[in-house]
Length: 163
Image 1 (spheres, rainbow, N blue to C red):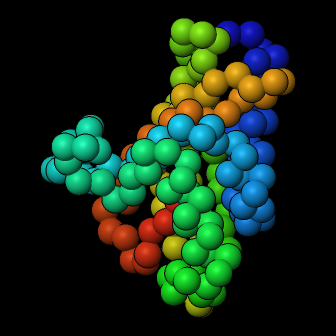
Image 2 (cartoon, rainbow, N blue to C red):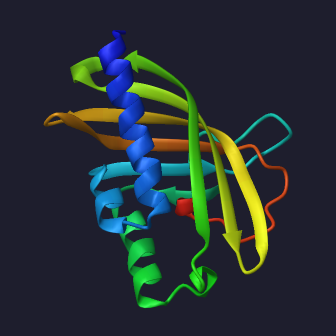
């Protein structure tokens, strides 16, 4: 993996975090391909989580970008009581590891931490994630986001913008 590609991928992920924190939902959604899968599995035991969202429980599962688009629609229209008021977030991305896949796609593994503030309470979510990126012009589209949440306790409503 060359240094220039590493830098470009890092900038892609930093931009994604910035767009989410700024609640720039149109630009954020544009990072995902139409057929993009978004999966946050549920833990089955202390060290085992659901691998197949069609056979086990998930905290979040969207088989395509439409699930994210629906959440954004609900946020914008005020139809999601859990987002009134909308929390402030700060996403941190670290330890990016990149592996080439077929057809110029990439697998990118990251560690992440999201700090958030809502209604007088500051909390955090943290974990790691695997992304599949496909080339799109001079950038990429997210074809899959698989997130593993490492928190043992979730003290608030959990949504895509926390991850």
